[in-house]
Length: 138
Image 1 (tube, rainbow, N blue to C red):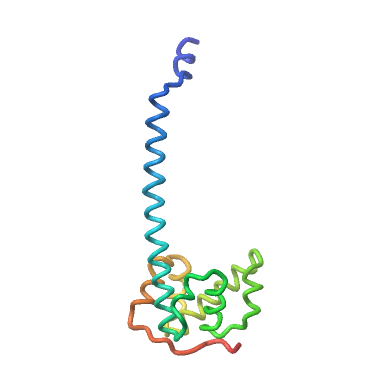
Image 2 (cartoon, rainbow, N blue to C red):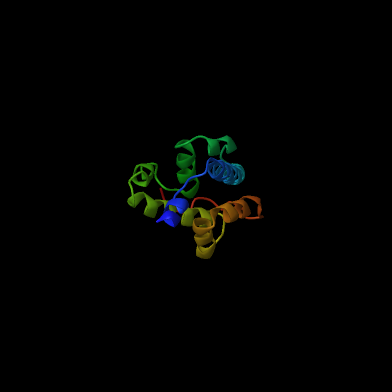
């Protein structure tokens, strides 16, 4: 019984070390998240400019989705469909496939954009891929 009591004791120094480690870990993760966020915004900015749209639209919520729908040639009412849980995910995947096709890329590249977005969106932005026009009839 005394061994169990010994194991259940808490030490203030142990909590301080654990708290410091957690804070450091979350600080590093936060910094990595911020770097990925900046890269993705820059990639969308470049993709919008390549498609002849204003780059600053990449940083405006909802408006960036409207511009993206315009780039791929989908109607604006799709934005409402994209806001519906689960259904929106399907329509968002369709938009990603259309975006890849609008820049002359295939389905495998679109899957890469879905699965590894922080890698494939910058590749699309800074590669020699040219915007070929809307692929869907609005």
